[in-house]
Length: 242
Ligand SMILES: Nc1ncnc2c1ncn2[C@@H]1O[C@H](COP(=O)(O)OP(=O)(O)O)[C@@H](O)[C@H]1O
Ligand SMILES: [Mg+2]
Image (cartoon, rainbow, N blue to C red; front, side, top):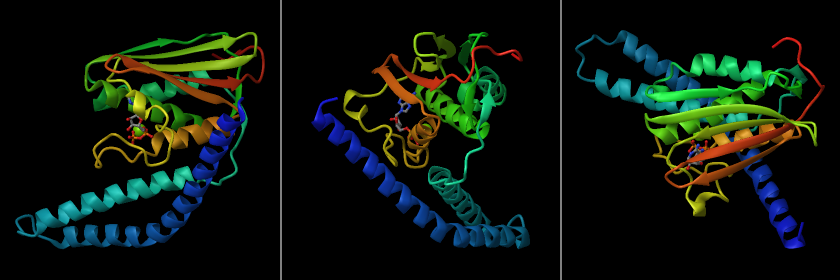
């Protein structure tokens, strides 16, 4: 790698770390008061009669605070310093489990879901709940990019040369603009309306992939769709329990 490229990568990693620390501090400061606001707005609502003219406003407060809690939760996941629980996991099964509950999500109404899972896939040494989180993030992004029509394809395969497990998540959605390509893994980078996107999904995903010693890359064509590809080191040669 050329040294300027290396420098760029290092800088990006530093920025990510600084953002992580900041996220963790903000999260700690906000979590408790937000919990309080949420609780009191629920109590207010419980005490109000159905036809109270203020009810609508309190419902709005409730929804907005709930949204803040989701963002804080995102930050919490993002700066999650918990020790991961690593064990040999079957990526195909995790993908199937995740798809099992995601396919009913309104995002996938009208979307065709295709899976091409390589049954001879070795296991990966991983933290099951973090891997779930990773796949959910990618699948939600794919769903959001397609706006109710298109195809989501999940593919797994074994790369013999490097003994790696390869996972692809493809969509036929709106794609990523060239000028955004270098920024999508940055914390808080989003092209979605503020109510929809927090811009944390891909930076959390990137962190999870790194934790597993893997890589994540993306290929995208505006208006035609995107493919996110993950490579993980394989833990063993065969999977007996698929
Ligand atoms: N499958 C996809 N198709 C098109 N754009 C995507 C896709 N996945 C990610 N992106 C782009 O990357 C940005 C960052 O994604 P993410 O970190 O998950 O944040 P968020 O989804 O909250 O915006 C998105 O706002 C979008 O512009
Ligand atoms: Mg997202």
